[in-house]
Image (cartoon, rainbow, N blue to C red; front, side, top):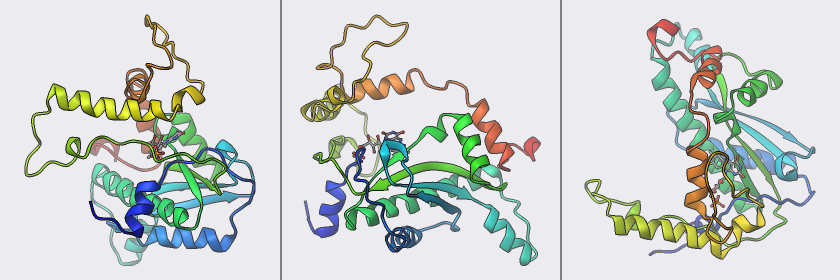
Amino acid sequence: MKHNETISLLLNRKSVRKFQETVPDLETIEAIVRAGQQAPFASQLYSVVYQSGGKYAFQAPLWFLICADIHKLRLFMKRRGWEIVTNGVTLLLFAIQDASFMAENMVIAAESLGLGSCFLGECSTNANRMRALVKKHHLPKGVFPVVELVMGFPAEEYPPRPRYPLDFTLFKDRYPELTEEGLTQAMAQMDDGYRAQGYYKNQNIKVKTPGREDTMSFDEYGWTEHISRKWGQWEPSPDKLLEVLKEQGFAFSEEDE
Ligand SMILES: Cc1cc2nc3c(=O)[nH]c(=O)nc-3n(C[C@H](O)[C@H](O)[C@H](O)COP(=O)(O)O)c2cc1C
C-alpha cells in the first residue's frame, strides 16, 4: 500500500476520550473550522456552534455542534426570488452529507495540529437531546444537530483501532456474496483488535444485558458484541426523532408540508 504523510495521519487517527486542560485558542479553532469548510459540499448545508473553556464530554475543553442547515439556503434563495420545492428527504440526505464531510475535515485538521477529538452521536438516538440542543443554541427552523464533537490536546495514547479487512469493504464491480469464512475473519479482526488493546476491560462495560441469559466474560466481549447490543436494543421507534426533525422544518411526506 502507498504511504505519505497525509495517509499516515489518517491511518493513525483515533478517537480521544481523555484531554489536557489547555484550551485551544481562537486561531486554532478558526483554522480547524475553515479547513472543515473546504470539504466538498452539495450546497454548504451546515453550520457549526462551538463552546470553549468549560468542561464538556470526557472533560474536553472544546465542544462543537455540527448542524445540518437549510436555513441559510432558504435566505439567499428568497433574495433571488426562489423558494425551496425539493423534498425534505433529499434535503436531509444532502445536508447530513455536507455536515459530515465538514466534520471529518475538522477532525483531520485538528489532528494535524496535535489535537484529538471524539464525536458524540447521542442526538441521533435521543430526541430529548436533539430538542435540548435546538433550544439551548437557538437553532432556527431548517437547522438541526447532526453530531457533537469534543476536542482538545490528548491526555491518552492508544494505537489506532482496528477496521474490517479491506476485502470486506472494497468490492470491485459488484457486491459479492459474503461468505461465512469472510464474516468470521472480519469479526475476528475487529474483536481481537479491540481485545488486544484491553479496550472494553478499561471501560467497565456492563456485560449483562437485561432480559438475556448472559455468561460472557470481559475476555469474550468484543466490538461485534458491543455494537450488536446497541442496535439490538436501542430506539426501535423513529417517531420522536421524526417529530423534532419536523419541528425543525424537514418534511418527509407531502402531508408534512
Ligand atoms: C456519528 C458518530 C457518533 C459517535 N458517538 C460516540 C459517542 O457517543 N461516544 C463515544 O465515546 N464515541 C462516539 N463515536 C466515536 C466512535 O466510537 C469511534 O469513532 C469508533 O469506535 C472508532 O474508533 P476510532 O475513532 O478510535 O477509530 C462516534 C463516532 C461517530 C462517527
